[in-house]
Structure formats: C-alpha cells, structure tokens
Image 1 (tube, rainbow, N blue to C red):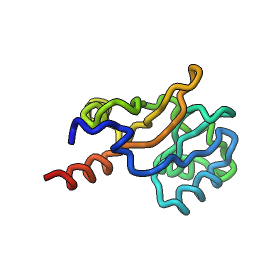
Image 2 (spheres, rainbow, N blue to C red; image 1 turned 120 degrees about the vertical axis):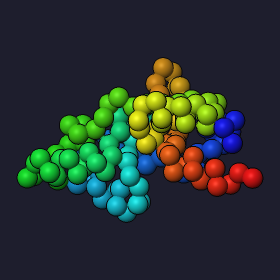
Image 3 (cartoon, rainbow, N blue to C red; image 1 turned 180 degrees about the vertical axis):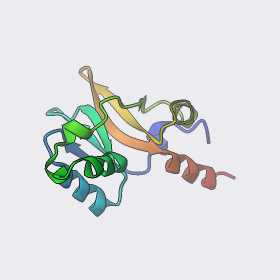
Length: 132
C-alpha cells in the first residue's frame, strides 16, 4: 500500500475556488459537495492556497459579516504539496510530520503548480482497508 503512487491513489477530483470569491460562495461549494476544503486557484488554474471548513468556522466566529469576507483573506497560502509520482508513504510522512490532514497533488506546468487532486488521511485509511 505504501508504494502506491499518488496518481493511482487519489480517489476524487479537485474542487476549487478563486481568491476573489466570498466566504459564502466557498461555504456553499463545500456544503453541496460535502467536502472539507477547497483548493484556491489563480487565473491560470495554478495553486494559490487552500481554505478549509475550520477557516470558515474561524471567520464566522470572529467576523459578524463573515459571508462577505473574501477567500484570499482567510485561506492558507502555505500548502503542502506532493507530485503525482510520489508514493503514499511520502504522503503519510507529510501528514504525520506536519500534523496536517491533507496534501495537494500537483503537476508542474511552465513553472506553475497545477492542482490535480487532494489526498487526505481518509484516503490513506481507505487504501488500508483495501489491503489484504
């Protein structure tokens, strides 16, 4: 299981939003898709950040008009990424070492990181259940 490449291991596509989207827009996408985060992309579909459910909760806690807030102001621009030919072992190492729940799988396109998938701890557990 640890040797499975990221390209083969990722189970779902990438749902994204833009930095200029409102938090209300991001909330609606996450709710409709039943997902816990969105990849934030720029004009060329390049990775700019990530916004999670907890980022939205934090905004609603601190801001009365949270829905009007912009994704750019609440997203995390420091995204942990992996390449498509990295293995699940590498993903597991990053999740454990960085104390995070997910990484973004990217491919390089003219110096830009293009998001191709998200791998989470839930995906690792899924593959663990398939083993044996």
